[in-house]
Image (cartoon, rainbow, N blue to C red; front, side):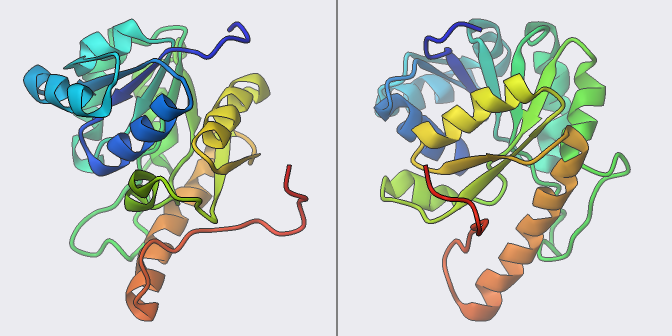
Length: 216
C-alpha cells in the first residue's frame, strides 16, 4: 500500500460506531464510502456525513482499499459472506465484539476464541484481517471531542497493523500494536467488562489507557 491515505469503506456505516469513525476519518481527509444492507439508507447517511458515496455493503467493500466492519455480532457472519468476494488482498479491519444479549456485561467469546479469528476463517487467507476499536465509545467519537482512550490493534502482519494504528491516530486516538490476531480475544472480552464498569459506576463510555508508554 502506498504512503497516500487509503480509501476506506465502512461496512455497517450507518450504525453508531461506523458513523463516529466515518466522521473522524472524513475530517482527517480520508475518502470514505458508507456501506449498509440498504443502499438507500447508506446514501442518505453519506450525504449527511459528506462521505464520498453510500451504497450496499458489497459495493462499498469493492470500492475501497481498506474495509472496516462495524456491525453487530448477530449479523456478523451473514455480512462477511456478503463482502467476501470483494476483500481478497485487502486489509479488513474488524471492530466486532461478540456481545450476546441480554447478558452483554458477561464475557461470551465464540468457539473460534474471538470474533476476529472467526472473521479470518470465514473470509479465507486472501483477506488481511486486523482488529481494533473494540473499547472506544461510539458516542464519544461522534462528539468530535478528545477521547482519553487507547486502541489496541491486533493482526498477524506488523505492516497491516501499522495501517490501522495510523487510522486510530487519524481518529484522535492512540493506536498500539498489541500482537497477533489471536490476541484480539483480550480486547473483545474487555468490552463486556467495560460495559459492566459503566453500569456499576454510572459513567458513559469508560475506556482503556496503557501506562508506561510515552505519548507520541
